[in-house]
Amino acid sequence: MFILPINRDTRPPLTPWATWILIIVNSVLWVVPAFLGINNQLIHVYGYRPGAPTLLTLFTSMFLHIGILHVAGNMWFLWMFAHKIEARLGSFLFLVAYLICGLGGQGLHTLLSHGSLVPCVGASGAISGVAGMYFLLYPRSPFDLVLYFGFWIRKTFHATTRGAVGVWIGEQLVLGLITKAVGKTGGVAFWAHIGGFVTGLLCAALVLPRASAEEREMILRPKPLTAEEKEEIFSDRVEKASELTTLKLNG
Image (tube, rainbow, N blue to C red; front, side, top):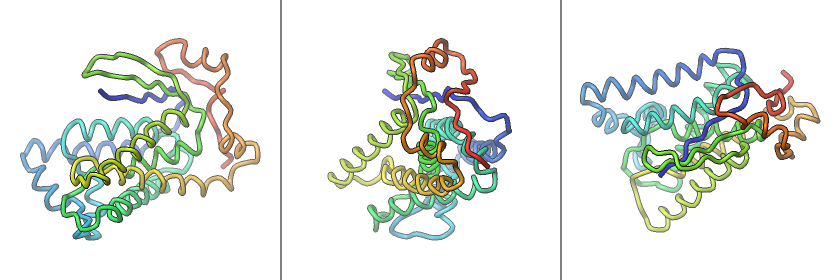
């Protein structure tokens, strides 16, 4: 069972070049090594180990993935959240924030898994940071949460950013506490997700001084979607523009 988030808010007209570059680089760095049969070797050499950290692996580990579901899932989440954040920050600052969030994720993972020599790879920490920035800056964006059992859709729920992302990060926290309590190593690095998310919140907080008082009110005290807004957004399965729910900050 898994839940697939679909962001139904308006996408900015600008091409998200940095987002596309990240998707291409991450995908190529899995597809080519997997085709050549050397992905496991790359993970062994360039994966990040909390018990033996290096500056090189802090960054290289963000661009390596274990399998197709790992990389595909991460790139889907990146596409759902990155476009508006890149449009707001600009491509260069978006890349900087992305890497900082990845480092924040590795930092918390190291703090709570110090001594571990299990290699940690994946863009999840950095992408969780992008989700954290979106969580703070665009709280009213509409999402479909599609519940799957295997490859069969069982249920679709409607939510806004705070509900959709809030449930996800809450799940990460619970799972992180459980794995910490039972002393499990390996598997999903839940604390890297949480560390990246918190770092993303801090990065987004730097944007708030540039917003007007009205925009800060929308961010810090978002109102629920009205019945009219829900009808406009969720009346069909096709994504369409919604001026009612798109937050635009002053440049």
